[in-house]
Amino acid sequence: MTTRSAGAIRSNGYESETELTTPRTVFNTATSLDGYIATADHSLDWLLSRESDEAGPMGFPEFLARVGAIVMGANTYQWILDNQGAQPWPYEVPCWVCTHRDFPARTDADIRFTCAEIPELHRTMTDMANGRDLWIVGGGELAGTFADYGLLDEIIVSVAPVTLGAGAPLLPRELELRVTEVAVNGEFACLRYGVVGDHS
Ligand SMILES: NC(=O)c1ccc[n+]([C@@H]2O[C@H](COP(=O)([O-])OP(=O)(O)OC[C@H]3O[C@@H](n4cnc5c(N)ncnc54)[C@H](OP(=O)(O)O)[C@@H]3O)[C@@H](O)[C@H]2O)c1
Image (tube, rainbow, N blue to C red; front, top):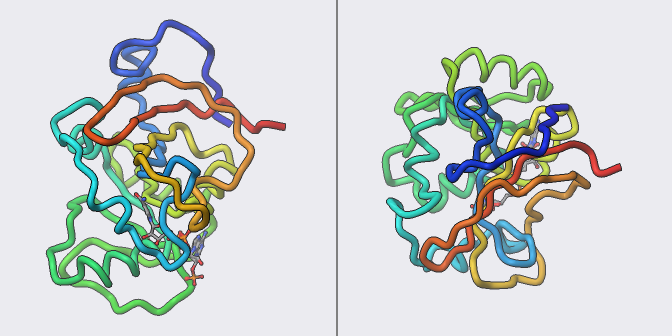
């Protein structure tokens, strides 16, 4: 388990230059205030209508520039196919989709379907990321599985001003966290946490 000591926190949320340059495994997602990343029927309408400034504090392009490999679950990938399938694949770095399904192979993007154990997948992604961060897109159970193996370093959430009452959970685990950055960006409260360890 990655453990971080308490210390002075810089304005960018990192404690030191070393921490700034050490690759991290980050779960970065948007969530409702009550901790859901999608409705029960996988709608993101509550999210996509919101305003934010990409160049503003904790903006997404700055995060993405540090990412060298991406992983997501089958439902998240299916959502992209269903809702953005007509558009070009939005990411340039390799993307792994964790699944037991038979998705059609892609020639237009570097997408790899896998049901490898998470530690093995993490090693493969780290090798491919060339010293850059790994981004867990979601869902919450997949991010939780990385945490189960001590392989989740950081959580970044953009909290939309809405409650959903039910849906796909943000992170169904007991984890001890340490807040390292807080910002308001448009309609979102943006929060960065280091993962300290298991709550138990
Ligand atoms: N708010 C946001 O910013 C945000 C971000 C990301 C996602 N989302 C949305 O949130 C929802 C997430 O759905 P979800 O919670 O069901 O999660 P998900 O991780 O997208 O999909 C879960 C499925 O992925 C496969 N899977 C997950 N972990 C696996 C593993 N270790 N090995 C092999 N297969 C694995 C399994 O499918 P199979 O075994 O059937 O293949 C599992 O049922 C989606 O609607 C997505 O669009 C929202």
